Length: 198
Image (cartoon, rainbow, N blue to C red; front, side, top):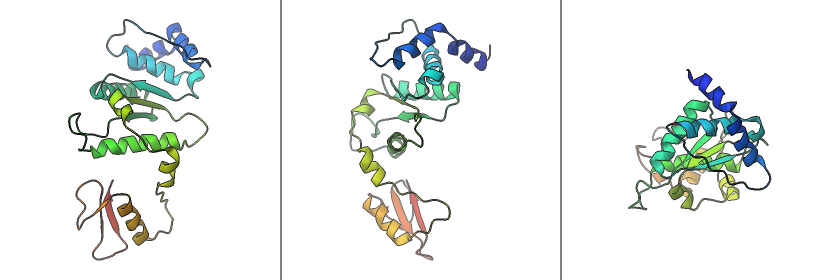
């Protein structure tokens, strides 16, 4: 049995229809699934996520810990081929030191929050896969996040010195050479060129 046949079997299972009915009702429903093994949970979430009745809803999937959430996200992404699934990790490198930020995790969180704060259309944005520690962190208000986004499109005329100062204001460190995240430098030969890493 190939992946397509397996996903179709889940998608057409009456039990998955029942879950969709439960989550699309106006009043909250408590649904408990027992006896799931292996990748059954991601297949069920994929079937529910892609069901026509749930197509307008955003979904939040909370797993036990970071490892389980990352594995679940990866599996779900492979099963559903969906691009609108977001992994929402904790900002920190480990549980013991809350001063050491993980730059790639901060970027994943920002991307996720940005997409959900400013949906591109009236339809849903997608699904967030996360775990309790990541949800406990405070986040920026959508209005504040929207006000601080720098958007540059092809053909836009920009003023590099102003953008340089804006990045510095956002906490980027001025350096002579960009070698790590959250650093920015101006070209020595051409001050109009900026180099930075998110």
